[in-house]
Length: 206
Picture 1: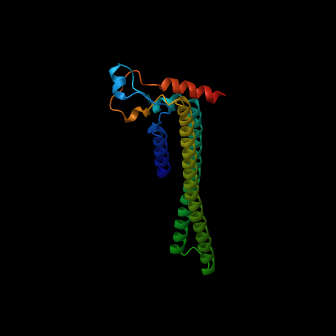
Picture 2: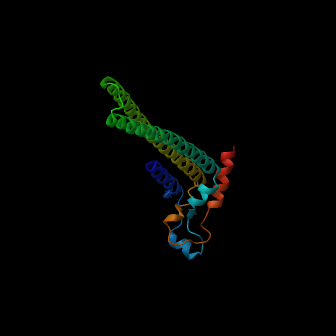
Picture 3: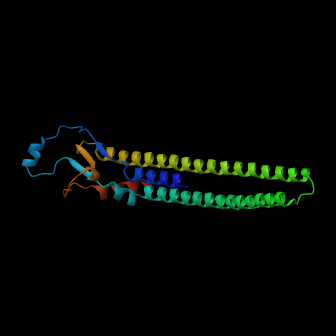
């Protein structure tokens, strides 16, 4: 269970940081940076806030809700099976104690009777071990399934955002489109996050 939660936490962190830097080469000749600065104009750079995109992009929100629902169902399923197995293990331990007490007090009428009871306990032990292994296999499968779905979602979101940014910058207007996570300071006039979110949601609604 701890490993599953760790994997999920790491996966969520991957989604939150899925865009580092987008670089687009201009398709038309641009003025030198010094000329732009001298003219008091904005540089051909845009900034996006990926946290805001993940928070307001409908595709990301809906996909995250689905993943969280699946995670909750997986946790519930594992918890239910774990509790059932724990009860069976406790019952088995009590059966072992009862068997030992009968042996110590000579309660069995014959050796064959004692051996038969011991064989039953050994069979129960093997069954419990098999169920424990099945539970571990299920835990690993659910973890792997979640990670695979998370990776697919990350790729889908990245492809979607990059596709729009390529379309947005089809005329080569921007030299750079950056994630503000890589910036030390923010400068007014460069952030196009709201525009990107509005466009992404409009495309997704279609």
